[in-house]
Image 1 (cartoon, helix red, strand yellow):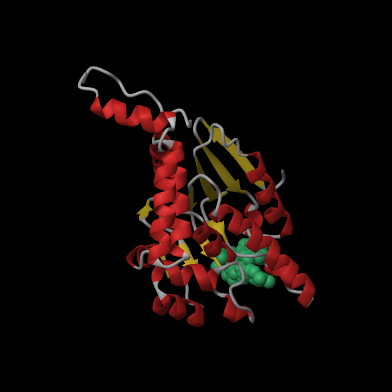
Image 2 (cartoon, rainbow, N blue to C red):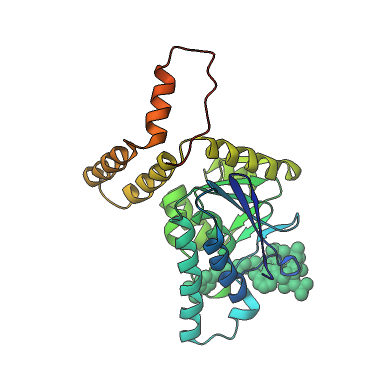
Length: 261
Ligand code: DAK
């Protein structure tokens, strides 16, 4: 792959978008490779993903403006679909995805981070949806996901004004969970990924589904989704083992890794 680096580190893996000379902007090739790399994730062993950008300046500075500038309506729609499909795939990917936002996350970059389950960022990170300044609307889910994450009022302000916000403001409005010095960002993401990977994988996956699917429906239906996914954990080896370990009074015993079974 030309623009994506994939590295598996035990039970978690890191996807790095690597097109540094264009601040990791998303052209069609990057979007296609992002889609392909998700096919390569070994879901038998990988329990959490991290998505980050190459270099210390940018996570993703948006969709590639050069590539978009001359698109016809039909080509624009096809480009938008390519991005939307891969972002949706990431959002619904069976395992948790952490965005380690290491700099600019503008337009499609902010939208990519919002397709991930969790966002943490470096102290030089900048978030924004500058699309209206370019004559378009946010097209990779920005109008929908930003409003759900930070509330309609703040999302509308960010989108209508096209004003960028820095890491501290992103933290204050709840767009990111934590801010780190640049050099501590990836280690913090890896520590979080390893912590997630230690927990029972079937339960973690079911939590992701319950939260995502529940947010799309009313509370009655959401609780039914939760009940089904709760029930689905039972009779798994990990549920049997996790509960038996708790009930075992032998405090000398060391907890074994969950088996994803
Ligand atoms: N696209 C292409 N190239 C980009 C780029 C981008 N988004 N962002 C930066 N680059 C390139 C620059 O052109 C420059 O290339 P060279 O001139 O060196 O060849 C190189 O990266 C370094 O950038 P700068 O020289 O500009 O670096 P600075 O530090 O001065 O500024 C910056 C950094 C991030 C503030 C600035 O580069 C910037 O404002 N970039 C554009 C940010 C932006 O507006 N992003 C939003 C793009 S719009 C759709 C779905 C989705 C979308 C659209 C449609 N449909 C459903 C159809 C999404 C739209 C967007 O994301």
